[in-house]
Amino acid sequence: MKNEQKYTQFSLCQEMMDTPGVMRDFKLTDADAVVSAIKSTGKLFLTGEGSSRIFPAKNAITQYMRKGGDLQIMTEGGRQAAEYDLSNWAVFGASNSGSTAEVIMLLNALKGAGHDKLFGLTARENTKLAEMANQTFVLKCGWENAVAATKSVAEQALFYQAIVEAAQGRDISAKLGEVADACQTALTAEIDPTLTEKIANAGTIYFAGRNDGVAEELTLKTNEITRKKSDFLEGTYAVHGIEEVMNADDVVIFINPFDAELEKIKTTLVDGVGLTVIAISDKDTIFPTIKVPHVEGMETYAQLCAGWNILVEVGVKLGINLDKAERARKVGNEFTG
Image (cartoon, rainbow, N blue to C red; front, side, top):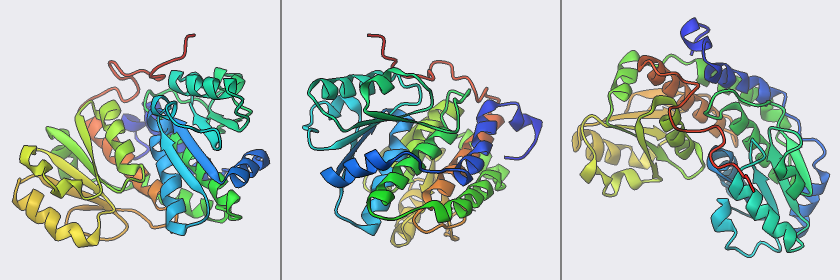
């Protein structure tokens, strides 16, 4: 993305470009109670719907598991979470609007059962979510005008990663400037027009990669931004049978692909199916690669931003109004009870 009218006319692009500043200025404040709750229970449950859960929660879990520690961290959507025994967990519900039905109903049920370690994360003041939670944190990035959430997703992820680190006696603040710079680089990287053309003409756009939220979140953003069909292929799923239904006009975008799988990917998908494979990585691969800077322990943010960059180029190529989807709503399922 560049500072050109074809991009700046859209709130979506402006909000994406706000992300590095949001990350650079991020501060974890007034979080003593939630950090104490995580420490005392040793268990943190992160819930929400769509973009408020996929990347923020899964990124926090992945980064924590790589470092290790003595916590249990889990995530599910609100409806499935309502079937779990969460009585001994610190529970965090994320909802930009503060009125997502599944989150409200879960926290309301837990509150009614006497649960006293309920927390909320939202982009608005004075919400229904705040009535349910013992403490609610409001994002500093503000409310987004585009249907697709972007800068809020990054701030939610930073918040979750920060509280998990704090509960382990660690701090992410020293890396925020580096992460912000990496995201700026990823957002403004040149995307080869031939790749944009391939993706714009694809029957299905697949995203493949770790279950850390990046590829899955970009799969959702593909629907909202490009109006094209997409699918998330977790881990090495892309070479374990789905090639049977893939077509030569499909595109698979691998996020930080496993080195040991590169040749298998080429044999199965490029040579076998004849489709286009693209990588987002901090190093060159055997495929066309959008390179992003590597920030140890926080590399996923630049990967996500690079994916946004690609999707914007595709959306612009297709002449789509990036801010307003035809059917998707800003608040997917709003609580009205």
